[in-house]
Amino acid sequence: MRLLLEDIGVAYRGFAAVRGVSMEIRRGEIVALLGPNGSGKSSLLRAAAGLQRHSGSVRQEGFLPQQTAFMPQDNGCRAALTVLETVLLGRLRSLAMRVPDGEVARAAAALARLGIAALAPRLLAEISGGQRQLVFLAQLLCAEPAALLLDEPTSALDLRNALELLRLLQRLAELWPKLGDGGLREAAYRGG
Ligand SMILES: Nc1ncnc2c1ncn2[C@@H]1O[C@H](COP(=O)(O)OP(=O)(O)OP(=O)(O)O)[C@@H](O)[C@H]1O
Image 1: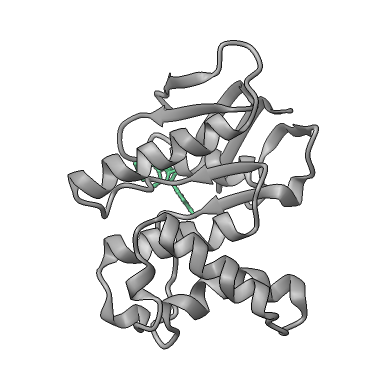
Image 2 (image 1 turned 120 degrees about the vertical axis):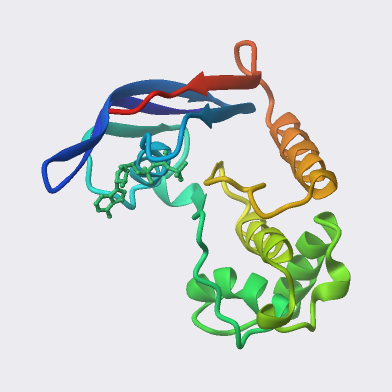
């Protein structure tokens, strides 16, 4: 199983934000994309998630494009929903608006896994930005995706929660049998 990016380019009205990026991400591998503000990291991630017009090719080998989960930097929260409803929302789309008990249990388990089970009945408007980030990650985990694309997932988290999130990602990656050397890889990215 791997995600292959080949010669990816993203342009906004003629401005090349991403130019000629190729990379291979193998099963069980965590890749951190590093680079200065405005260097095109978000544009590249959105292209990899199939959410951004781009040149070049994005290929999923051994999984389907719809098994890719993407967490945007600004997750456009719906403040009138509770935390539990938000996590369930990701499942509702594929369940034609019907919520079986098993789904509620699954959403609650995802919240517990991220250490925020107690937030379930709270409104999104009443929790912190960092807590919201964890809620949206819980929503993604419910769908058991094959690939997770996270745009600055720790930007709103304090050090303790940021480390906890990284540990969780590492545990998730270890659940997938490794091909090649696996582990954490950093991809320095200078932009277009
Ligand atoms: N929708 C858009 N229309 C026009 N230009 C855009 C658009 N989105 C991004 N850009 C430009 O493309 C470049 C890359 O932006 P991008 O958000 O991909 O960078 P980034 O590396 O993720 O930045 P940051 O670390 O600040 O989040 C920037 O110069 C930005 O101004």
